Image (cartoon, rainbow, N blue to C red):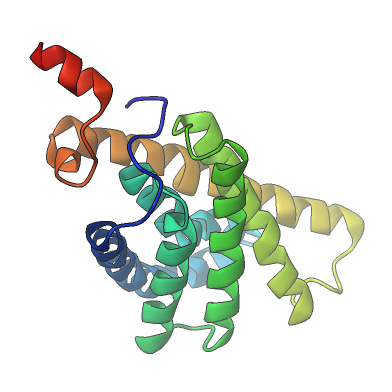
Length: 198
């Protein structure tokens, strides 16, 4: 997968539609993924936090496909909305999570001026989504009673799950999709493409 972003910065209707389709798929996945969180919880030691990265993946994956400003935020908010509409476990708070998680990823991609789409940047975006999701946890009082070591374990496992699922897995999934050539339908032609034509 190319390291640099491609094409014009503004979102076109095609970009928005593809982002919404990606978000719709992830919204359904998010809803289905809920029981995974519940299955890991009885293990203890915050093992369920390892599954959290899946809920950040719409933002990172959508950006890797479209690579334009606003895509990560739009995808995550739309996916969270769809999850909530399908009766997700966290109700309306799902939208707050979606906004902050999408914003976290968006800020990282913006920091790199939307020109970097490598695995390192994708992992950083997943970390930012995880970090901002903690604000919602704090607001709802999910983590207020944790001791320091317990809090460190909680955050460490959420970051690890984020890096693995929304970072590395999202990157290689998008890379595999790019190899099929299907992404050429949604990405603009680059100067290199024109140069190859001679």
